[in-house]
Length: 105
Image (cartoon, rainbow, N blue to C red; front, top):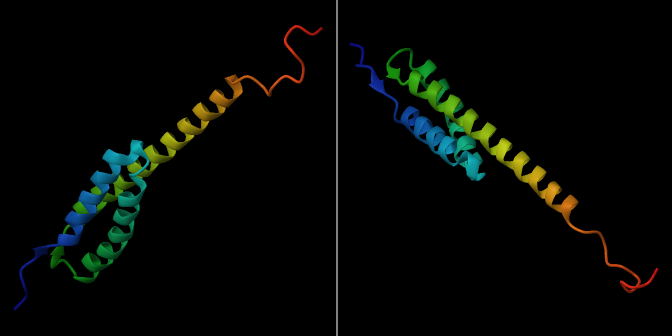
């Protein structure tokens, strides 16, 4: 007798971590849960495939992986925007100190 198909709890964890990565991606902290989601998705995907249909959750894994990648893209975008803003701030700052008094020609 074959066992009944059961949902994978790790698949839901991949989705949850991907969602957290998406929501915190612009805050630069989203790269950590997104990376964990991608690592766990790879492991869980292998388990679901090896179970031969008795372990479900591939849709949750796929959605979690997509959310994790979007979270990573948002993190990279936030870092690029911060770097450009920092460079523009440095470019607008006045140069070094003057070596002579202000009234000297």
